[in-house]
Image (cartoon, rainbow, N blue to C red; front, side, top):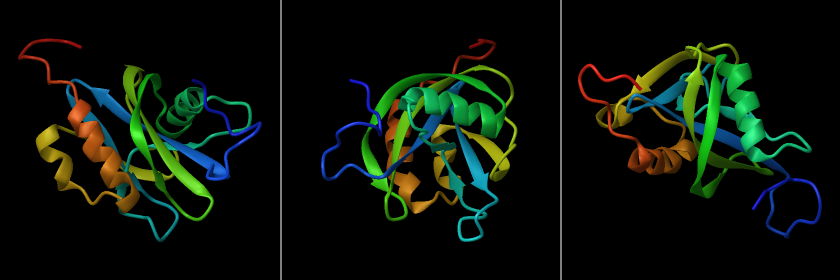
Length: 150
């Protein structure tokens, strides 16, 4: 089923969908530290951004991670649930696999960290990202063995 923000919607559909990526690479999850806006600066999130009219959520995720991090990703499954942001905005999260590039904080972030499952609690996640991070952790692929690539 393709979700879009255009066309008929049910009464509970939000005005704006924000997509975020639980970006996996070598058994780790990428965390991004916000640099803006001021009320979110210094806290950590799953990177992403707003769904644009006519885009599928997966297309938006690929575009946003390219713009924000300079990487190419392959979207995976949607993590069940959605989380309210500010009024009229809702967060939906997809898993994603890094295809190419080394993530760099290009927009809205001042630091990035790859976290193993045991390190996920070492950063101060934004409140709305916490349930998605918990679900992402359950899906976190096992780290490859010593000397393995992938």
